[in-house]
Length: 472
Image 1 (cartoon, rainbow, N blue to C red):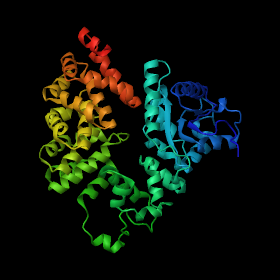
Image 2: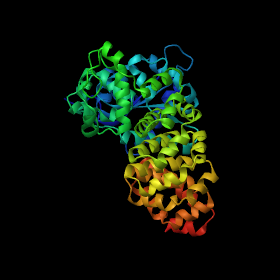
Image 3: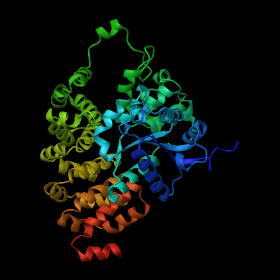
Image 4: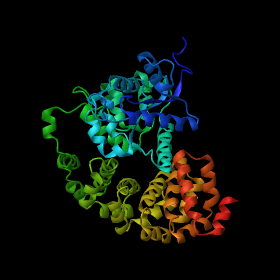
């Protein structure tokens, strides 16, 4: 059967409401930018057929969907989540296992929560997907936003006929909500179709067959406990205990503190375990804090810092087991995304420990250390100099040479921030970073190329020798 619109398959479907002029302008500009990057785009105004069947074909035959979230521009019934076809497009995407990337005008960024209040319950998971804001008024910011979209889409599942279509809408929504939609195919391969089926996926299967890391397993288990059917077990294949058995069983102090925290964002009990617990309890507490700090929508990072978690996390990075150090590194990486937390992390003495992890840690630990050092080196010359003095620059350059694609991206991000300082810029060049950054500019992901370009910009400042080396 011939497709309704040519070519019949697309890289990206742009979902927007034509009732908002700003959404129309954003959709057309985004379409043009993506096509310049060689992406095929389904946008209604460019299609010969635009009826419901054509829209459904476009969504189901596109690798990913971009949802441009807007208000009604002062008109009732014209907001994105009020338009029936916008909702249909999103639900078609969920049913087909498509990655959905929400975007918003930079002018509306602070109103995203307000816009999400208008979303139907089954689409609330979009509020948990990392939002990208687009700035039409400044080309450099616009290009950065488009690059971020491309990077997210490139790392998402793209097979429209994937086995993930066997998952029902509830499972897709659940995986989207907790940020694990990229693993939908893996769950489908295990025979999962409904939420209840997830009870048979134990933690070993989550790690080995699905490919989740420890943080993701922790996040999956905690969230599944909130949505699983009454008859289903906790992941791990264990049926829920009877009320009598539950009452008789001693409460896990970590769970008690987590429940208290979720009711009132009181992290003091959890931090108490981190300070006074045995090594295994401290390790678990760091794991929980890492998961909670991964999503800052509820202000978790500042609340965790205010509860005094950062010094004991740094201490765990110093004297914990390998597993404990990994969890502490993950927590500090996530916390360091907040400027106030970054300063507290440096003050607590984390920089030399992170550099040590960059030198002797596993590949994954080195990557976490690079991200944290990238965040710590932003907006502070004192921290940049401390990182350089601790010996980080040659190690970051080594990671740029030998690391995974993700590690190279993060190493380039750290070098980008460090290159703002003149002394660091010279040390980066002397460590041999310039040809590696140029190579990343040639072969890296969109975000890695952006990091490399910014690092080269910093290196080219105030030095003719470095300028010539970059050109050569």
